[in-house]
Image 1 (cartoon, rainbow, N blue to C red):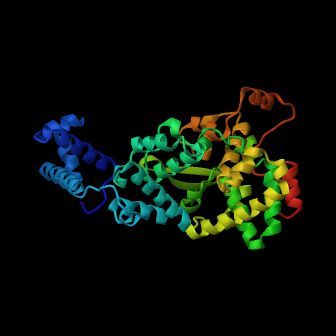
Image 2: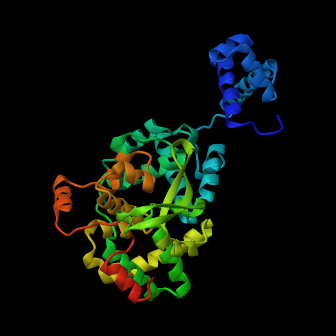
Image 3: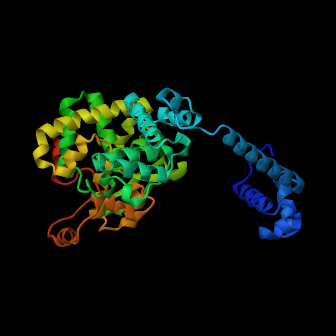
Length: 401
């Protein structure tokens, strides 16, 4: 068992272990039958994996005993509601949360804020941090909703749930994710103005980094994608009209955290005409790089709000005012792609990185009237491109590209 097992053999071992756990007294032949193999085939596959049946059974029993001991230890060390913030910080469960926070691209003040929010739940409901679950957060919500700004309270609860990996009931989700900022986006004119403003307020090196990051984020990238991105192959698919007739695309592989800590891998398609800018980022970035980049984005958007706030819709201005300088690009991509690909949510979800196509409605849902207007309006051709038409020509003439 020195060499790693093949996925097939590993799956066999795991299935066999599962059945041994259920039927600890079963013979090798009985376990083989339970996993759909003949006794001899099972024996040979175990041998190839470096196991005898007795070794496998012994390993299962050792795992079961180790789990039992861990449960006993957890019971012995059961946490009590903290009496002070200092005591709260010494709990093992809180130390694990702090470790996660330290590896995330967050400011020190934001990390402290998250810990204080969790501590507040412990004190108000007299519970230990390890005992906080969905029911606890619902009770916290009920206790405070009549005395607090309800949307702000939901934001706090969503933050706590995120770091404790708790799934919340739908009615407690924050308003942002239920459509408050659904029309927030940077249309092609604002994307052009973003580049022009960045060119004016940043030095050349900073501008090239911001331009590269904006092109990447427009392809569905999240903050986490900047840190996990890996360069894949170049593929030829086209020409694809929605991508301005592009036929060659650079694949970028990203890994992002899903529910319960599992990792989700996505393939981002970046047209080669844009890749020449994106590659200046030299992905993946460090956490420090992402923080510096975020400051540059905030600088550019702050200036844009002063200069061009009158041509932004209210959702866009509010979203930027909330500091969503990275995530605004994801909103933008959702709406641009949905229009370009004729509301094909399944395709857009795969291109931009959503597990469930229906989740797109929180970023880019449209009313029936809007759909009819956009579908039948004459001389309108949407492209899922960062810049196109007159705005691309202007950007080229002004040296923005």
